[in-house]
Image (spheres, rainbow, N blue to C red):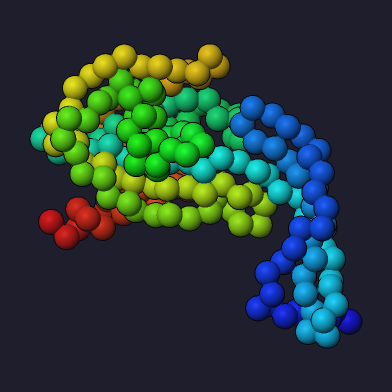
Length: 190
């Protein structure tokens, strides 16, 4: 029979071992103590994918009413897929600043005047990763094009699409889907 937990007491990591360290994430094997109502601990074992926080954005050129989408290789589905500009937040970087940096690096788009609307602020999957994702719709009222700045192993194609093309282009990544759904609700209110 399982003991009852005292969920008012913060769980405590008893042991954590890095079992894989890579350039994008680390996998940790952890033993975690959960306080029981009798004052003892129930120690459980979990694996954590430690990942930097991330930003995902749906850029909207408000003058032309076009949206920016990308196509790139994604290992999870082993395919070239449609998606939205996204990337990791650097240590100490504000999510909105990271959004603007990633937009410029991946597409060359540099906003001169914009409004950033936060569609979501959530974990990718609390059961296995600490990746915290900030999802935006960014209304580009005025922008100009600069140079892209890809990582050495990053290959991204982008294009501007209409609303109808956006919703039918096959975006399946969860955070991107959240941004599109957020924009769909905004469009319905217009």
